[in-house]
Image 1 (cartoon, helix red, strand yellow):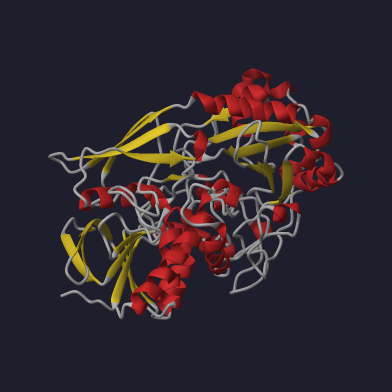
Image 2 (tube, one colour):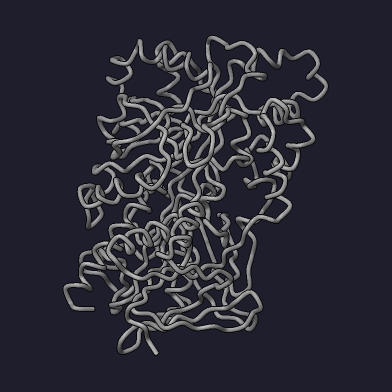
Amino acid sequence: MTNPEMWYVVGSGPAGISCAQGLVAAGRQVTILDSGVQPEAETHKACANLTDLNPADWTPAATAFLREGMKAGSSGIPIKMSYGSDFPYRQVPGAPSITYDGAFTRPSYARGGLSTVWGGAVLPYRQADIQDWPITIADLEPGYRAVLGMMPFSAREDDLEEFFPLYADRYDSLPMSRQATALLAGLEGRRAKLKAHGIHFGASRLTVQANDSHGKPRCVQCGLCLYGCPYGLIYSTAQTLSTLASTGQVHYKPGVTVQSVEETGSGVLIRGTDLHEKSVQFDAGRVFLAAGNMNTTVILLRSLKQFDVPVPIRDSPYFVVPLLRLRGTADVVRERLHTLSQLFFEVIDSAISPHTIHLQTYTYNDLYPQPIVAKLGPLRKAFPMESFLGRLLLLNGHFHSFHSAAISATLRRGGQGDTLQIQAAPNPDTEGRLHALIGKFMKLIGETGFAPLSSMRQLAMPLRSFHFGGSFPMNVSPGALETDTLGRPGGMKRVHAVDSTILPSIAATTITLTVMANAYCIASRSALEAGMRGE
């Protein structure tokens, strides 16, 4: 029998937890269904052993488990692990098979989703970058404020606020590395000229605990961020989930992978598979799908019986450009620092793109020497490695999905289960825009204090950065394979998609914060609408 009082959220990643928060704030009872994969018990124990010690006493042997499976090559890191484990990407019973042609990504079935492995960078979208959306930044603002209020937030007041408000009353600031401090000082002295060229910069905004609170220390600058913070200071939605579950505000049911939903006369029937490969089902008043773009797309296509029908995926093209500073910083190898993004650059130049170009700047981390040593071979002994590392920076960048490859997702039926086929055709326009962007910075070496190493640039394979979505985009008047502004596919009333699946386009700035804000807003507005109807 349907329980109209119980609303279900599918997934515990950023969209799912933000949606649950919005529903709880509106007074709704919530159950979260989740595959819920977690790290191995040995990983928890190894992290606890580290946090029981002073970081100065950590030995290479004690931290070796964090580095398992993380190798850097000339094309970057093949796949980012979490605490030396691949648990964020581990397959579960009931999950669809996915094939890739010209693209590659990895869906997550972890408790906390991809927030268990992200770099914590957050920046809102600009209205100029979502002109094709049926909602505005003003509509998203309550969501931005709500979700930033539930996370630790490291930020500074700087020039980025002109285009990207902080949307937070409380925030702290992580100390920058010496490389980043010197770079920022030089940029500040040339701010006016850079601004005239459409280059805006400021401190990275990160969901990292920068002060002592909640029984945890502030960042100890151990340099292990990319492997997984032993103290858990990089925010994961699993943290908020634990808080909600402990207060009884949310019922959490792990070990369930949802496969389809069906609206009934008074609610929604949810069908899924448990960890023992047995079929399970749940009766709900409403369902909010936050399983990640790939899985939410599969659930919707299967539920709507849209097999062999391709839907588009919009991707924010990702690239990496090494930089060489004109002046070096001494002894970076032994510096205590965090190794997440240090500075953001936002390039607003219509000659390159009609949309914002987002760049994140990284200073030294201990993965940098690996591809350098491999490339040098026997010349390694004569190479001034430490001097070079004191000048080396890495720029990770994104373009708007306006410049995306042509990507489609098609659900196929098969004897061994359904398969989602992903096909992508490169967009030759993207490489040209990257070339123009690098050329712009080459002309401004005197103002920025660094030179792009153009020959070493890398344009990643489509979907590689996880900044994608849009297979069921929001529309004021949604068609069969579109959704309304509450994430409901055409014809459905009680099923809401709330993750990146419904974004009409993907801006270059970080996707997670906007996905969370939109999910929170959909939850709030859905609860209000249902209340007005007496549901």
